[in-house]
Amino acid sequence: MLLLTSFMELYQFLNFITMVSNSYNKIALPIVFAVLTISNVFSQDIKTKRIQFEKGRSGSTIEASITGSEIVDYLLNVQEGQVLNVSMATDNAANYFNIMEPEEEYVAIFNGSVNENMFEGILKKSGDYRIRVYLMRSAARRNEKANYRLEVNVSPFEQKSQQVDATVGNTNYNATGKIPCQLEGSESAKNCDFGVIRKGNGSGKVTITGIDGVARTINFKNGKATGYTGNDKKQEKFEASKNADLYIIDIGGERYKIPEAVIYGG
Image (cartoon, rainbow, N blue to C red; front, side, top):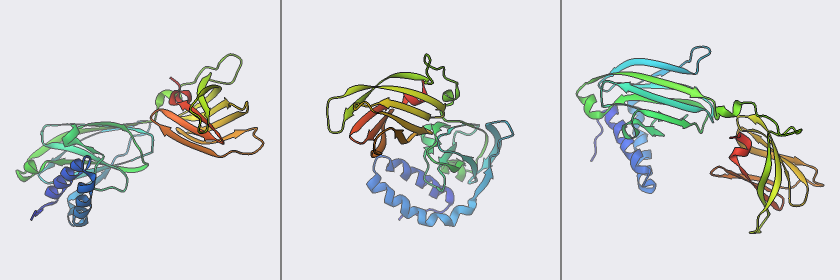
């Protein structure tokens, strides 16, 4: 029987199981949840500190140290869609950091011992993220010390979209062109005219002249299609999904495929 005698041993075991679960979810995830039920016994071993950026800045550098089984959680409040960049330099090769999403204390979306101490990614949730700094179990048992420098930066999602777009000709559109459109259930696609007014950060309006000749304006907010307006005699059913960098928009019996670049530019 496996006996976990310290929080560090438990935490390292959880990290291992989490890595395995990426390939063997059906086997590993139940083990993770079972182990989590006893993890609260050791939660007092974690020190928690909040990261606050100075006024006018979007980043912070932390210089500190840990010894043995010490663990430090740095809490950072961020918004969905922001880009988080975290890197750490340390004088101990067994010193790493993990990142957990809001409301999550143990299962990491990033594991420094696997991916090295450098993370950059677009955040999928809003709230307090945990940046957990620790020593590997073998180093903790030897009561080793690690001096580290943790750099944390946050930037808005798709900063380039903040730039002011020029307009096309004598129109209010930032870009015009054609996109694939087709009738629902049809395999043959046609091209429909569109014009886009961009407002930045994935927000704006895309006006499309459909197969039936009716103009419809699709509204986007923070990278999501939220609905449409048009001169339809009756309001058609609206559905939106996304496949990689392509928005799939269904309005009534027509389907439109809008590349991400239409709303973000580039």
